[in-house]
Length: 176
Image 1: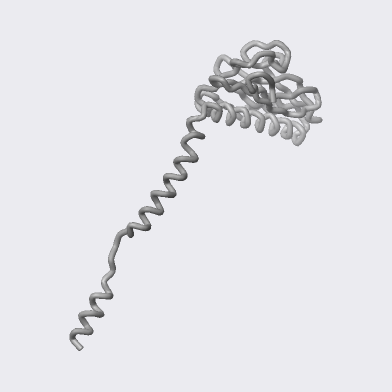
Image 2: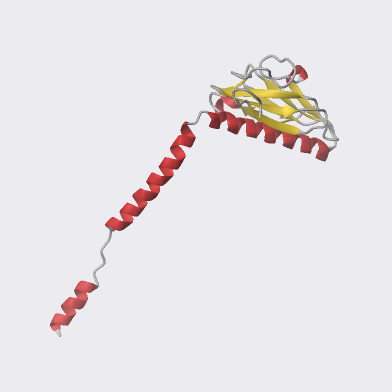
């Protein structure tokens, strides 16, 4: 009987730590995730793409806010400070986006792209007075804002007074 007590006591011990198999699975998962994410992080196009999509979203939200509030809203671009601000119809500042902090390296301008889509512009904005305005019907000024980083350039804007917001990327020979 005493020997059974010893055996039982030996089996009841808990061991802590990870098995070799568990460690290998975790290392494999980390390796796969690194292999997928590192090239995406090193791609210089990611910052400018993110900034362009955020600007497009802000343009669409500004348009919808103008319709909802039944008053004109605007986005004012400050190319020298690398920022843009959204104002309600009453002139109240709603949002400020600083590209220097939200998308490091991204600047206003057409970069290496030729033949900008919109009219002639200075500093990367073709809107008159560097301001895009949407009226209560959701229609707005025609023009584009150009963002670039290294070899990647995006054009975000409204093609006509219909208020449709578009985004296009320079592919080295054409806008797509």
